[in-house]
Amino acid sequence: MIRDTSAQDRMVEVKPNRKRRLIQIGAGAAVVAALAIVLPQASRLFSADASVSGSRLAFGVVERGPFVRDIAAEGKVVAAVSPTLYATSGGAVTLKVHAGDPVKKGQLLATIVSPELTNKLAQEQSAADAMEVDYLRAQIDARKKRGELQKAYDNAQIDQQGAERDLARYQKAFSQGAVPSMNVDKAKDELQKSKITTLHAKADLGSDSDSLEFDIKSKKLAHDRQVLLVQDLKRQVDDLNVKSPVDGQVGQLFIAERATVAKDAQLLSVIDLSALVVEMKVPESFARDLGIGMGGEITGNGNTWKGLVSAISPEVVNGEVAARLRFEGDTPKQLRQNQRLSVRILLDKRDNVLTVQRGSFVDESGGAYAYLVRDGIAEKHPIRTGASSIDKVEILDGLKEGDRIVISGTDSFKSAARVAISR
Image (cartoon, rainbow, N blue to C red; front, side, top):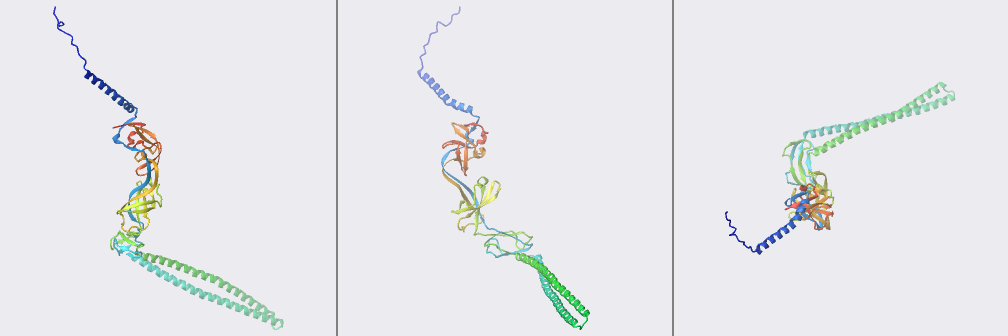
């Protein structure tokens, strides 16, 4: 039988370690506390439809205060009156001015040599002179013809009077038995013939006079028409001398000296520096709120001037609408064509308005909802928006002062009802 070592074993009494026990108890309490914090958050995360990093989002806080709707943009100085002059006829052009030269209204700027137009004027003037001669000759011929007809009528009347006297004399002689009845009958026939001759002479005088008047009037109308044609050609020849329509300054020359141009070719432009306006581009979404006569501020060169909206284009180009502001009062003297200036147009100003910073959420939701952020969860919340400015949006319903919403980046939410925002 093999003996073991049990006779050598002895019981060792282990004394309790209080410090270690306290450490274990503290660790357990920490775990419980951590679970109390993490479990609610975990439950919210599990209740969300999606999770998005907060670094990809922009947030805004609903505030109450003044609300100013304005349009701020960059504008450029343009001339309200800046006519471009064209060639009214083809020909060789001689310039009388240079770009930048000051000019007065009516001053000669360029001349166009057009032999074709000049010769045509001479030909039509000659035709007009010939028609005037025909018209004058027709008047003379009419007077002459009218005189001959009057003479024939007068002679017929005299013959009728003579026939009447002869008939009276023959009737008297016949009553006394001095002449036969045959002579009386013959005198009656002569009187009847003279009456018919007088009647025809009178009719010829009236009808031929009307015909002569028509002939004269026809020649007069032809002459008048030719005179109008000559006057128009004279106007065209006068337009060969290109004159300034306004007081101002020569802008751009579109042709070289002694150039030969076609009809309607651009020659040069004239800028009226006494009537400058500022042209600006307005986003289409704000253009509907613009109105003629609205006030604005124009800033540049260290100065600020008051302006009024004077024109709004009816056309949208690349999502923008062109508008023009004129200076209220006298036009500043130190401005130049195409100079850049800052423009601000005040559309609306109110106090005590609930607003939030403007962001892409307005366009993405159409202003129908926003994501309200609470305890790390963005919840889709219906709202109603009002007017908007460059940087703010009016809140009419659905939010209150102090609420925090996602103003940008909601496109990644994919219209989820609840989205967890992670750090």
